Image (cartoon, rainbow, N blue to C red; front, side, top):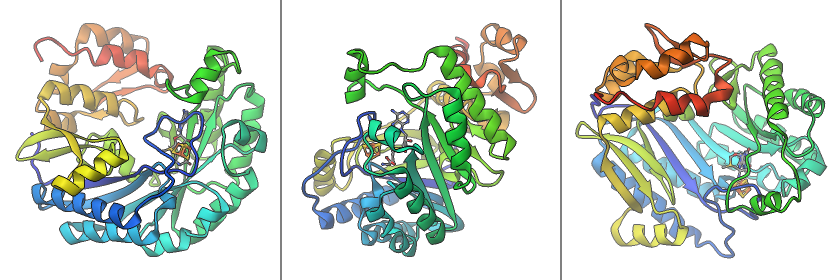
Length: 391
Ligand SMILES: C[S@@+](CC[C@H](N)C(=O)[O-])C[C@H]1O[C@@H](n2cnc3c(N)ncnc32)[C@H](O)[C@@H]1O
Ligand code: SF4
């Protein structure tokens, strides 16, 4: 099964934002006052606690996510990277990403963030026109965002660009035009997300009360199709449902999640999947920033769940993650990680119709969705993750 000497990806969550966007249900909070010294100490301390249980690892990626990590003092970013380097060896080719909001104020810090060790910045541009950005409650204009992208591209070797499409009233032609304009500013990686209306957000209430209408199913499917055709034509094919890259420029960190390899979660609400003494552990940190901080101050970590998961649970999770990827789930990796051969896990009666209708491919390499099946992922997952009883 799992050996305990795997490479390690480290996720660090920074939970603060300047304002809360009305569509966002991430663990992000607006705080009047942040005790920066306490936060720096707590992040470093939680890394030390994890290191005591996980030795002999090589860190292949670090990802500062949020929230808005571009608001972190660069000295905190440096302290976190140094703490990781103190406990493990960091691979020479390690990818160190930080998510940034593209405002002019934050862009001023990009050079210092790069000097702290970050070599990839992921920018939340979201839209290429000001009316759409206002609707999304963003604090930047389109031009300000593009200026920030240019500053990031000078500061670090790799950047990524986030866009949200499928917005109310957006036609296929509007989106084709917007995406085409964005291409002039994109390096090797783009995340294109369809807007989702999440429970508990201001958009949820507004949508329920009829303040705006979301695209119907047919329009949403056409928007997805045009995204695939434009991006494939320029060499940015999807390697995951919403993520596009030139070959070799995929997010190594996010591939760790989707390939279901070891990752450690640091900071409020962060999750982890790590192998300890031959067992795969699922970990989950306390989500509320103040709770997490006081737990770390008391006991050195903010975990509220830390349990070994069994082969069946691991198999379901690995299928759910891996089928998001164009490459799918590899047979050898599956048995190594879960202890269960792929054919033993899958219920052939449920899989066969998906293969016959060419939504899914099952062969000697493994199992993967076809380009036709990928937009129907949720329905496919319902069937594929209903494992054989004997498994
Ligand atoms: C952690 S968030 C944001 C990082 C950064 N704070 C920002 O806003 O630019 C990562 C990405 O998720 C996407 N996202 C967040 N909520 C979404 C929603 N409801 N629908 C679609 N995409 C969403 C956005 O593109 C965002 O850039
Ligand atoms: S979208 Fe980004 S900036 Fe907006 S609230 Fe969410 S994490 Fe914060």
